Length: 252
Figure 1 (cartoon, helix red, strand yellow):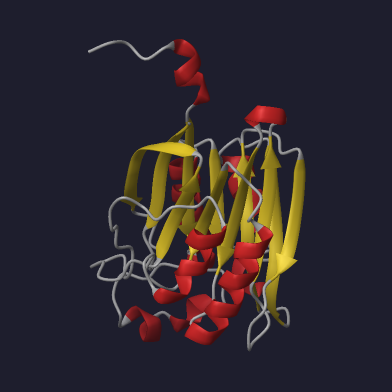
Figure 2: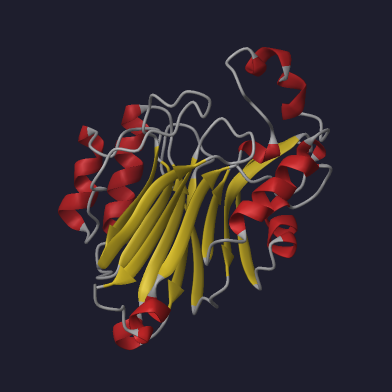
């Protein structure tokens, strides 16, 4: 086997997409009832966040969904800031999308070892407000690429609107990654607009991520355009009800 050129190794990127459930721990369906207090109280979340930081430290870029920007349930801690500090990420950004008074908040976030050239955030359309996409641009010229982090709605009609918006927003990027919790499979009918309009391609294999204790549904994806996918796998995410998705990429 021939050795991989050093410059090719340096071009590799390790990315993680994780719905962290605001640091809560859910290990069975009954926990949604017996541990419902965790959605309003901070108890036990610090241990889960420390485990998430250890996982994230193995990656170059991490996209988070359901990251609390600072409310009662997170102990008024911005969880993206906490994870970036614990895992030694020099760059981070948070896009708060939904807040229930001071009790709970949720949003998308980016942790990065690479400095973005630009950060943008957009609200997504839908029947109920509170969904968004965080977009980061990296590199310049031929090395430029775009990363988008999102969390789509549960309803099909809202997802159709959101995916149509994303398809138009990301249509001009030749090298692109879209990651997040899509709340649908990568081959769901509403996903076709993405593949038709952007450089994104569906994953080569189906990786199920929900529920984390016995995955049966494939809801979390890292969609790629303009990169070779060297590794694609589900990864336990410190007690979240979703498994994370880890990938290794190399520019084509």
